[in-house]
Amino acid sequence: MAAADARTFQVVAWLADRRLVLYVPEIEAATSVAGMPEADDAARALIAELTGLDGDTIRCDIRVGRAPGSVDRLPRT
Image 1 (cartoon, one colour):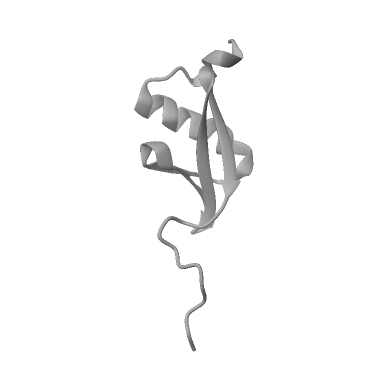
Image 2 (image 1 turned 135 degrees about the vertical axis):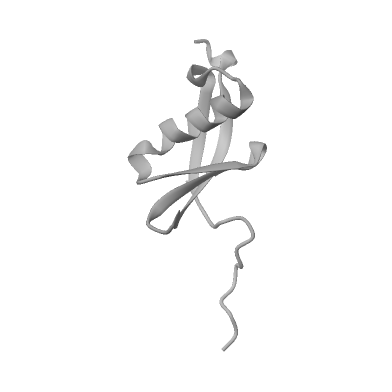
């Protein structure tokens, strides 16, 4: 595969219910895995399934962050 054929997707990861949630904002889709070792393969499989792209041409930039819509500040007490 030539580097020009590769496409990179941003993936946001966070822990929820003892699973690692992987959210791909560009396609508004998510999946979950048991841990980080499975994250890249799971994210690429999700993207390939939903976009029709060849999984070998997909690259994932996985970053740990907050769930979409989560509050950035602590509640007032």
